[in-house]
Image 1 (cartoon, protein in one colour):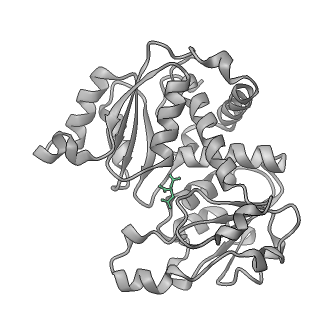
Image 2: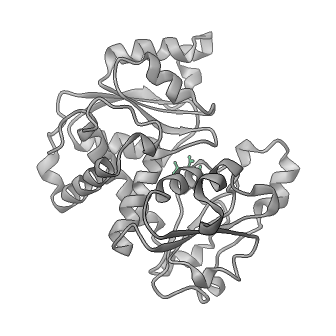
Length: 305
Ligand code: NCD
């Protein structure tokens, strides 16, 4: 039962709870109109201290499609944060108004702190380079729907694995499923964090710079953008920005049933020509993101069947 729980990282939920959520999202996909009034009378707050398109809009669309109402800000400087109000005070106040709070924050650990002071469930919509659990739930729903299972897969994660929270989050979660192998593809400077590698164990991952030499082994290629806003120097960012560009030439080396995922936004790491390849599923993934958030909101409010 996830009713009343916070979601700060996916591991806050058991595998049964995750499966239950994925199943409920699938049920919603079958007949969305049936759930149009499920959360009527509920109010969701979205507090975004960092920019967002998909996470914020998909949460808001999900809430509105369930009949809930939404309040919030997309720029903390339009709130009392600009007067110097602390996160803890903002949360204590908003949790008097809303039934559920979705927040994104540049500081790692901010949602965990917020959860200690909130009277209502908190959903982490991304904290710094740390975790992004609802993106991971989106990814799980996408993988299960398009690959048929969450086990026995070789997953290549490519790009900025150091600062990217989506890859940290996805890796930690996929580790819990059987027969998952990871290939981490990144420049030396943007290698995935040591603590993640330690958790995985040496026999389950490879680390490499080369997308060309590895793309043919993959069931899933998870592309990510270089996280400009987390770099200390513009020069360093510019140097690494064009490191990987997935184009049709590279796609020719991939398996016929490999899928290409990306949490989006894309900058230049996937050429637009790849969008026409059936294996490119990143926009479908964005749609799955709305359905899993519908399931999540409903279940956290104790409304899902
Ligand atoms: C990601 C994020 O914010 O971490 N975007 C998203 O929520 N889909 C990925 C990114 O910004 O690169």
